[in-house]
Amino acid sequence: MYKKALGQGSDNAVEAFLGNLQTKVFHQNSSTDTNEWAADLFARDWLTKRSSQAGWSQGGGSTGNTLSQEMQHQVPPITFTRLATGGPQNNFIVEAVIYKGGATFKSTGTNFLKCQFQQG
Image (cartoon, rainbow, N blue to C red):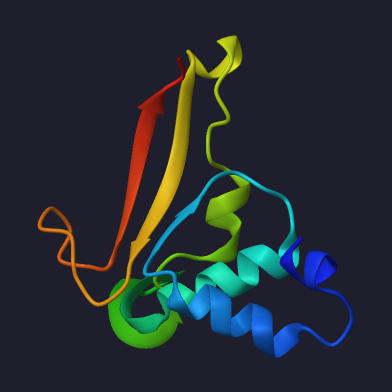
């Protein structure tokens, strides 16, 4: 929307503008570009992944667990497609993910917070 309003060749101006907004609120949307941009804004971090294995043969069975770490989005792009949009189907609840640049939320220790609003 900003790029359209500012015209062709405005990519740098839009990025500079958005970069200066230190509080950003993301509601449900289906724009893959916006959702990827938001996920990148929230950054990636090392997340622990657990996998389990089980095997059986005539001689008995064995199981095992493995823990590994991999870099993943802290807030994956799909998150934004699943946020509640209000209305009777969502009990008039609207969800959002809030970004807080340069600070953290006490409740999460991160710079983002998923929250709910009563639609009014």
